[in-house]
Image 1 (cartoon, rainbow, N blue to C red):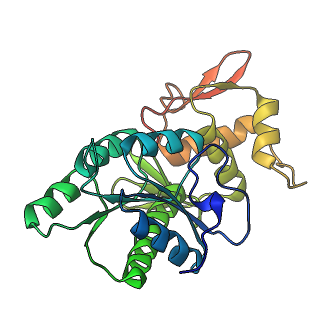
Image 2 (image 1 turned 45 degrees about the vertical axis):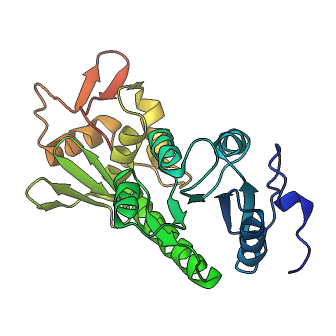
Image 3 (image 1 turned 180 degrees about the vertical axis):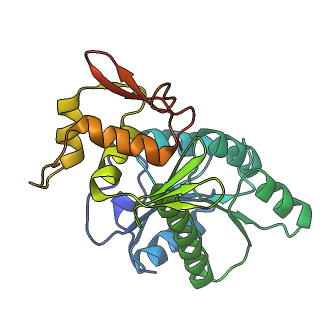
Length: 253
């Protein structure tokens, strides 16, 4: 085994330096030092920067100081065990968790997955398989997050920001002009805030030099019509007299 750089095993603040070699950051929680060092060395070959700690206390401390893309968590640890730490991690964040165990009891695997682990591997294992599983987990998580960012839901509507489509609850696609899409996107980014006509015009215009050929009021009126928002008693895009407009969707996510 080649020598392990000190910065890869020290769990103090500032461990992870910005380095283009590392496209993924992993935290390994395992009290078996040889396994930790083996994984740190092996993962580095695949562009994964790994930090190793031996227990839950070390895990919590390093998570305060740094950020990671995935946690590789051993089940059998001194003090607080891996299942308890998995439960705590899932209550605090959505960071992907790959659990390791020397025990092959199906109940351990089931409990771990029920507590929020994304995958489970039994020891001994092939390091290359661990890399493959980490990559699969991260690909799935990133795809899910991309999908979430692409589709913004509000009340009974969904806006696909990639296709620039407004989709009703029954699946009907409502076409939007470029200006209408930009205006709706501004409202979704700044919900329940009063925005002046000047703010809406500037924000919806973005970096483009293109200007709307009609007033912002007419554009709001057209967007209300697309959303089925009664112009006499609007529920989504409300007029704040003398100030501008307020987007008042009940749920956005």
